[in-house]
Length: 343
View 1 (cartoon, helix red, strand yellow):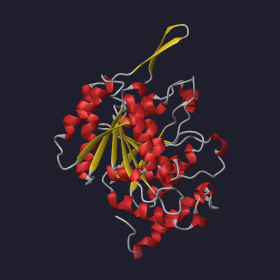
View 2 (tube, helix red, strand yellow):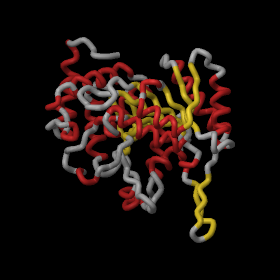
View 3 (cartoon, one colour):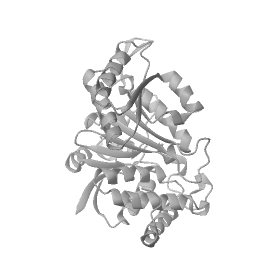
View 4 (cartoon, one colour):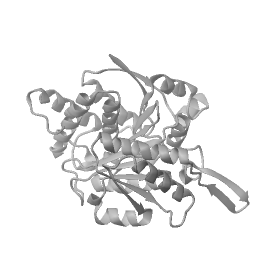
């Protein structure tokens, strides 16, 4: 079987880290057919579109995308490509697992958190206008449909993967209507999953609680803006955004992406760490029904992280981007005669 996957290499370090991930994926022996497209500023220079029609058609055809980082201008320029893709394909569920890797120094070992974030509405969706000069209004739109849908996604994932606890994160003490609606929907869904413990925490208190003791949480369910902020906070528990995968799910389409920036200062130097996009690709493998291949790469990745000399320079190693990929591929090849590290 050949899997057709839409590939968005991104810009900056994007082509290097996605290239490394693609090489590792292909080393599993699985057959892929990659449909590669640019997005963002580079795409606009060629096609006068930030998201080319050919890219949209490819995703509609393959239903699966793997995406590297794409630079988003701050305070002007074009809208976030990430946000636009999520809106275009109704990718309503953002999924970020937070797990430690060996030999990455952090304050909190053995963290195992999952962030579930509503992706399509709320304040983060960027519906803004200038009322009069000097006065700007930003709208926070919340619907029962979207709030119920993301809550059901979270509880279904918890049930299928034997997670024990979900906290809905909110600011309903102040935004009583919008966040209140979100909580009512989460409560209604929670009643249908009695085996899963359900709780609610105010978002600012959650930030404090996470920093004090992240182990008290299992899964965090939240609306768009809170999810964006808290998922970055939680990434710090495992070393930063360079180690955290991301996935965006809709009913028919899923796009898997590294959540870190494009790091233009080291672009083209073969220095970037491809771990985040590789871990995102592992989520993709599970999504398309190849869990054994995902486990094979995960075991090899963890094995390589136990040898500092094989790591990239950002984590104290000496390997280049391509050498790091080589080390993982060799670890995969040697695993045929070894017991798996984890399952």
